[in-house]
Image (cartoon, rainbow, N blue to C red; front, top):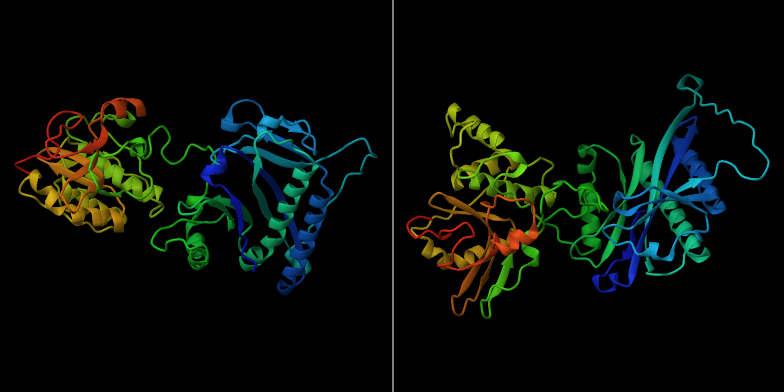
Length: 448
């Protein structure tokens, strides 16, 4: 098969003994041909020339500092000057080496090279395709970078080069291709795929290929896991810089004996009062809960849209005819119905609203809530009276009826400090009668 698929071990249990090394090499493939039918032959010649360059192995390795700290440094092609402990990169932030062909040395000086590219009126076509090879390798921590490591790296680069032919031929209008690394949650290893650096429309056209890879790797078909936006960012700022993601992951148990947990599936961003220097304390909790829900769709790659701000939410509701024009710029609350309108309008997502006479009735719908998390996996906005919260999960014993709810509180007003959030129980398990972090009953008795 021409599918550019490569698997690399990344199990959690061996990560403490394994370092990660990432090697990049950019190749410009220059194609010249007299007939479209001979484009493949021209590509073969360009790939063979690139392969000879890699096999010759006359490279300098530029080490990029992890975390962006410090200056890049060059090392010899044998990597013998690279400290042994530099193999200790993690999967999230591997040691990055970029390969550059040497431009000179102690040998004879080369003459300048003049390159001639024929234009279309000569009967020839010429094009340049940029191909970024990108190898992710696992190495024992403390291991020495020797000639064996170098040979293995170059062999993997050659493999990627050869596998790229089918994809480049299949997409003649694309001029930039790059290998990307993925770590789908169900798998214990990474997956490396070749993608055109293309528009969202071109990526959508590859849906059939992704579906085939989902089937090959036994990945679920109800969620995107191999889109370009799913690729590992390797220490990059991510889509929500400065904000906390999935803050519930460090929590302990709920205390429900014999319960079954049904939880949010996938990452989300914690939105709360006073973020981004916007003062919405006292009225914006449902807006923040909505933003958390939308962030789930963004981070799990169901949408390329951004999370709406308060004004965009208000303008959307006015545009739908739900609110008067004076609503824009106001400090008026919104509730579950308005949130359902926004999700439908901005994301095309339908919602189900459950109404209770009292917050005390919520355990009677525990099975229905658990099923939502098991089948849909999104956060849920819950509200009683004038307060809104975000529900992230439920722990339910169907024999005793005992249950606890995982509540994310948008009323938090301080900085993005996970310690403060945990200490203040701004994200935690709650039962009927428990107090919310900001005070009051999250399950209001007279309205919910």
